[in-house]
Length: 463
Image 1 (tube, rainbow, N blue to C red):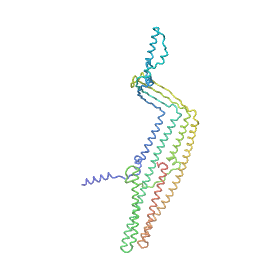
Image 2 (cartoon, helix red, strand yellow):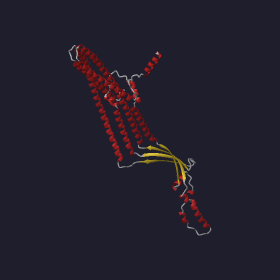
Image 3 (tube, rainbow, N blue to C red):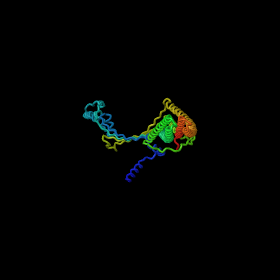
Image 4 (cartoon, one colour):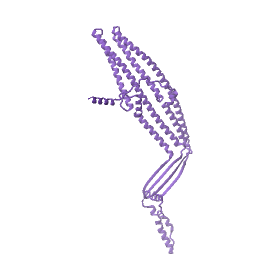
């Protein structure tokens, strides 16, 4: 029996979940959060798109296999030429030679010369109505852009910057989810602290209730005093219950962020410190600023794209083919090649290209202004956050002192009630003040943490 109990106890211990620490939660977040996973895939897709544009500079090699059957005169004759099998008979010489031979024979026998002009009007049946023929043509074709006015390189730069934007979008999602997770852990710590404080008050109310009940039995207190205590007890129990519901919601939210069930966490025990960063540090690391700067580089590359219209475009191609009425029949004898190059140059199109270049330059100037505006906006946000944090720090300091004072006043009034020097209403009023200070302190601490995390998020994390 002892062995069985020990085995069962060991199983329970092994299956018990350790409270999740913030450090472990952050690792799980980066690997399991669904939004982060989707953002990572977006980055990979953007990189592949950039590679596809970059690949255009290497040209294109195609294998083309045609299988055609036709009895069209032009097609059949062309098929024979493609396969290098055309003969004089394909020109209808069988129909031409018969009257020509008769005329020559007559002349040799001393007959009168025939009118030879009729020979030119004979319709060659073999040429006009050939039998159907099948063509198997295998062609290997390579096309290479030699010079595109820097168009391909400019588009490649644009797509690489677009991939960088997607990467920054992913970093922004990671930053936001990290902010939400850390804030949830610290909110949980404050929530549990408030619940503990209210439970201490609830214990004091229970003691007070028992004391008043005894005093009623001895005739030193009234039933009204007891009802006041019970009403206040119900009010505190409602607050504790509501906070427990909020705690459950926080667990669900943390589980949603981590894409798994979470029922216990290791709450932080220390207050979060204000990040020691300068305005320039934040501007340098801020993701919105980085995205705006990347957008500016895209605008610069767009100018290069529009300027490419002023340059000539040069391309080359090479083609190797073989053709026969059978697949790869006599491929070596029937092979052919074609090589060439082409230059195209848009000399004049009504000033459209120049207008597009000027428009691209204007868009670049506009983006530059937006980047500068964003930097000033970040500085304004930082100044506001620092002021709000300092305000909450001062408020927390005062509330902590007020809470201590409220605790002492409540104890004092509880003692005075025992001596019949204060009413139960006075005691309940002091206790309400005590509870109010607890809730105000939690709200102030929550707001302080929220503002600090907002500053950290603005600086792209505290790493």
